[in-house]
Length: 465
Image 1 (spheres, one colour):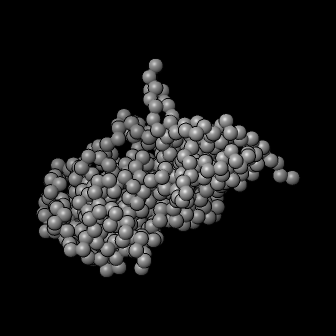
Image 2: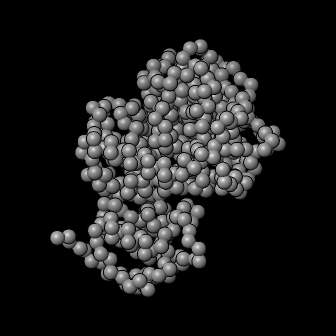
């Protein structure tokens, strides 16, 4: 006989300031509307998830809307879920020091390490063997694609895209060449290709970037791209949505939209397609991805979407309790996949291929050595491949791609791709200005028919085939 847990819900628990009111038109849950859902739908989902009955008067919750609804659910705990759902305000507090508390808005993408520990334990209960894990892995990957919305974008993408390459600039052991690739009709992603001067078959490393000042133009990024190119890897960096030359097309505000998450993923997929078709020197058995911060999160996403990657080195990015504080990482709510997940579990789908996880003690990745890394080792252990996942942790460092972290990345790719470690020398790298690293440089130089606003892009995407 099924046991029911009865929870009574009273009107007094629903102060007006806690909920939005439903308007006359149904809305889709998204970053822009704070992932809002009707409260009645959320309560019905809770009943189904936990096998409970929630007693309430329909009139009490009619028209009530709950913001960040899916992110308030804790799949491992009914009571924590109810506490989150019926929290009286959208604010939270944290004690910073004695007599000092910080009040901040509800952050749907951030939880506590203790929450992460409970989530990982709950996830572990879902699979105890390679066979059970691979069932979960398949569901995660397909549900991630659905939530991301990548397939409709791919359907709209250009089959025979226009591409442009700038003049090749030669330096000590490597070259730099700017490029622009049409991804959706009239929409370009711009970047730079760092390639070895030595002839032969080369590994390829995609280099998505994070939100540091100057993004891919940042000196720490340039050192990493060029140093690895000197060792024998073709390294490809590209703009974030709304940053660099993308800002010239879509404006800076485009980055702070849910669309930036699937769009950046689309760019990664299309660039890889193009590079492999355009260059004959790439060894398809050695394709890697390495990004830091938001670029690390995008690195994980690209491995979920594309089986061609054979090694990955996400840095200062994923944990079990932080989904990424920018819409380009969490705007589509992809950690809702398969009934509730986290970026650590999404990263685990890369097993048993080689992965280096770089973390430090000065940001949210401080928990990696004790929480996320052991979890990854367990998943890799299903394949007898625990040694294929590594953690380079820097307890005294903060959220920067420092020389020590870059060296950990160099050592990893030198080993797994058989690169020439003797040529890994940052002192031989020439730093370039942002202007040197741009393909077009100004809106007037973009090709005819280019898109020049986010509204124009959305209109294009909404148009029938």
